[in-house]
Length: 219
Image (tube, rainbow, N blue to C red; front, side):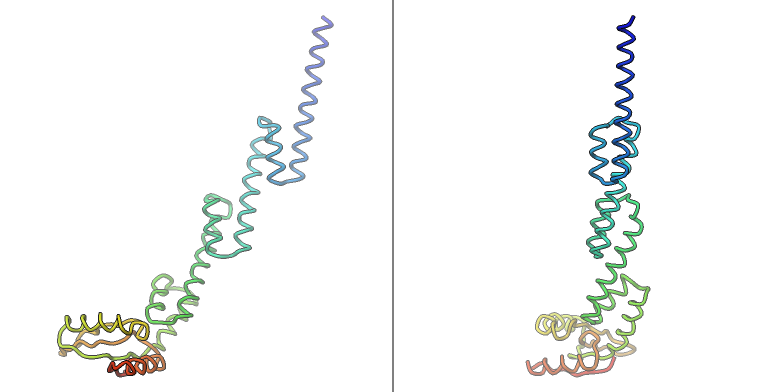
């Protein structure tokens, strides 16, 4: 009987020690509050009553660390990386908003640095609203000249000339376009993309040096 009582006493004492260890380790992990601390706790006590909370804390801390890194870098790529790592993270909605803002800012920087009719129209198709869109529309209004390159009696002739001139002078003209007849006219005109008067004048001057006839006209 004394043996049984002794075994029961030892078992109870062991349980008390084990519980004390679990709680002590949990207190330490909670106070340290790092991914490593919680992972160490889980390695020691995978089936403890605090295991689920420890796993949740690990996820929360990792999510917050990933978000802090994304915000520090503050680029479209950093927000994409956060969303790839934490698609259901606590900051996912904000990350989507930041990603859109970063992509719009990068697109506007590109369009603003190369303000052609094509780049500005492309920006507006993607981002029709916002202060950058208003600036893009204002910049488009300054592109009110073209370099006229010739007139043709048929669409086929105009298209052939367009291909040739685009190949030769695409860099200066940005884009060669065929302007179809209007009203009762049957004449197709070949011209550059819309430009400022200064850009059109400079482009036409370069073409003339190469023997290409051209004329600067207002749209």
